[in-house]
Image (cartoon, rainbow, N blue to C red):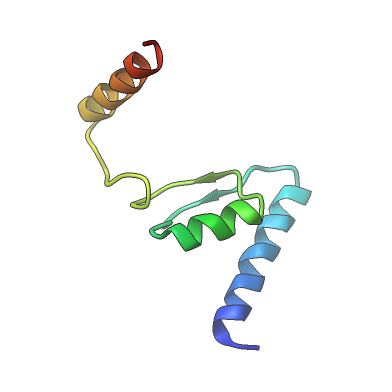
Length: 74
């Protein structure tokens, strides 16, 4: 088993264990589409980090959410 395969097996096992314990899983450090797709495939509940957005200030976050809200109301 390669190191990458072992890492993927460990991550998938952790996600399954946490779900069996009745909790949601939040993956941090997601930076690529490949990472996101694997986590989605393994039923990870939430992901965060640079793949979706660089960190933003609270004011910028409110601005982005308002823009999204306005674009969906049209």
